[in-house]
Length: 321
Figure (cartoon, rainbow, N blue to C red):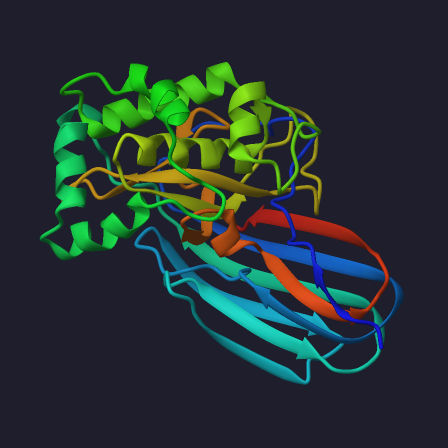
């Protein structure tokens, strides 16, 4: 009997270069998204089991009006729930022979820009560290779980040293985190060939190259290394075609960024080091966790198969644009 084998996690797909960005949106935007994952196996698979994070989570900035997850062949077993972090998570098992597996999510939702925030008015980063280290309020207690090492992100003196120029004594937490975001954007080169899902963060820091997943992990690692709660966020980014060019259907990509807790009043602030900008209504949130390992789009195990090819297509369509 062929032993069951894990299927490598679907990575956050990346373009060959940083996508074009348009002007910052000032009001809510409505979207229709489609995310299609297609596995082609070298031999027949008798049984496959998968866990996916492909539907949007509850978020004060998002209102989801429709979310459908379809699988072909039709699963024999299927369940949906919220994971530990509150993300929608689905499990399914296909128990008939198959050479192809297609997983598709279709979502319609409205996304609002974040409330205006003056980063210099947030508490000092040292104050936020103390609030998280000895939490008393519900928000601080929830944030404190994102202080600790995780599978793919471990705090280190090297990460603390890289973060140090941003975290001068008494600097407001959000202002310092924004500076860290800008430095990552400036110091690191976007290179879709430099890393894989399994590349350690130490190599990313040493070689100064990577993709959105790496830069999000780097931000999380730096923030935790100085004592601030930080989480990894997975989702989509609306991209804008070059002037005079049509939008290409299926050519969008998944995206990742980091989020830092700046105290009870300011809460969580999402920052995108790949594009050097705070998250706005161009961003759709799917899931958040300690790192990519908590929220990978698709992971699973199969019986049979002998190798596979993976094709991922993502389309983010503004409905009213």
